[in-house]
Image 1 (cartoon, rainbow, N blue to C red):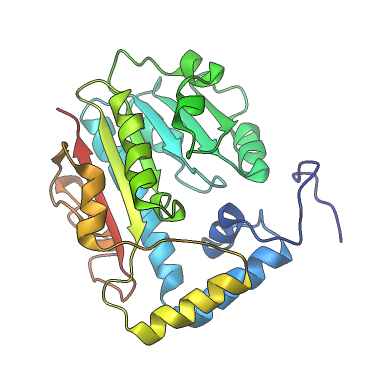
Image 2 (cartoon, helix red, strand yellow):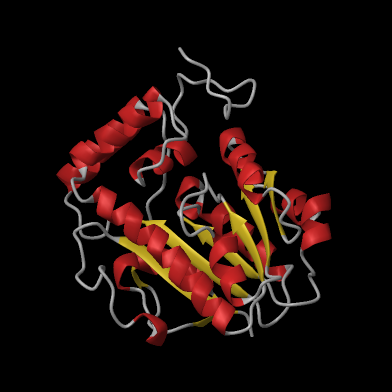
Length: 270
């Protein structure tokens, strides 16, 4: 198998990884045959999933733009994945040239390529980290160097919480991060769900996940809302990702809801 120059040492190219599967589904090229096989299997089960992941990415861009317009200049992006067009720092730094961004991912390919793209950008960086250990991320030297925790920070947790299987642990992780942030900070989450799907479809998806060694825990609307306990939701509240918009985005290609639900929301810490 050909070794690409962007592949860090020690990567198991035969094992699919979430960040690289997502990259493939978004039309990227930093992925392996194993990732493409998993992505194709997902497309087969969910024909609209390509639109779904694109809409999820658009939700991230909309949130970052909205927050930048509100004066937020610091972003902590958990499970950031492999960079694609319209990265957080690109969107934020169009509004504030010195907006600060820290990308966090467990996948070495994602972090290596992020660092390559960031180049000599002094206001953004990427680190290898597991969001299931929030204190390790919060105390990381580069995180502390880039972000000022005495000022508001936006915590971006896009398509991440459903990879934390235990409910109590998932809620505790988000709370730990938010407890470390000052009032005026924000939490953005998007989360996979079984809402609206038949038991037959759920079984089909679970079998597909099992084949590729992917473990997720989809949650209901009510369960996803618990992540925002104690925070003030930003309109339009928790909604399917393609429909999340505000006055800055009254019209878009996602005005029509697709048959692929991803709960998405943004809330402020008061």
